[in-house]
Amino acid sequence: MTNRSSTPSSGGTRRQRRETARKDARLKAAATTQPQPFWKSSVFLMTIGAVAVAAVLIGFMVLSNSGNGGGSASNISAPLVFTPTTSANGAAIGPAADKAAVTVEVWSDFQCPACDAFAKSTLIDLVKKYEPTGRVRFEDHAIWFIGAPQNTDSLDAGAAAECAAEDNQYWPYHDYLFANQGKENSGWPNRALLDGIAAKVGLDSAKFKACFDGGESHALVKDNTALAQKIPVSGTPTIVINGQPYESRYVPTADQLSAEIDKALAAAAGGSASPAASPSATAAP
Image 1 (spheres, rainbow, N blue to C red):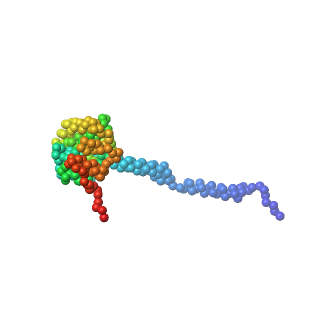
Image 2: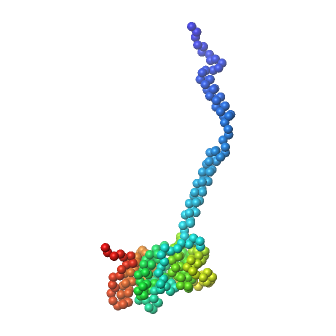
Image 3: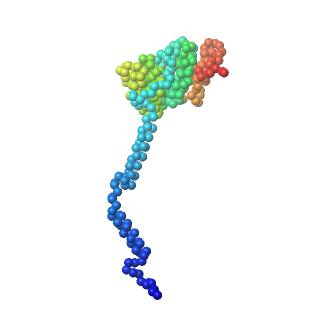
């Protein structure tokens, strides 16, 4: 009987030979593998990914900033509804001051979001209801309430509207300003926008620029602001009916103001107010 030798042969053990063969295979594969192109490398792919993410973020910021309103004559939004102006005279609508039974004053700032809401709904409803009667006069007073005295956005917007009033286009200009209202004190009522709105409402370009640059319309807004302090106006819009401020924590509705206007009409006529249909009222089924 032949016994196995305990001394390893010159080729090593079976396990050692397998490890050696595997190592040789790996070295051979490494020697024959072509270098990987740079554009397939992980560094390159990570760089491209970072650039793509940055581009998306920049695009989002541009789109977000584009929603501030104003600033461009080529990007002017038209009002969805215009204030009726059949009897408009400058910044007023309705009969002359000495002919009106009731005068409704609106002390407003073109940068004020609440004024924007009031102008686009309540005011239009009231004018539609009472202008045909020939007894109610509406007066708009543009004031420099927001940003004063450091920021002149409200002042400039009001001054531009006063220039439009010289050609009896105050109300269309008023509606365009609110339709393009931007963030407060952001510079949205810049010269390009103000000149662009002037063109939209049909104002003479040279006349409008001379008015705006002359300073008188700015002085008028400042005078309005000084008068507002005597009412006093503690917030905008402030509504004054025949000299009596209407107190409200919120933007008043057409129904609420109609009730007060009807009371004032009744008092002027020496009688009691009859129920008046609200602009938004509907017939009962």
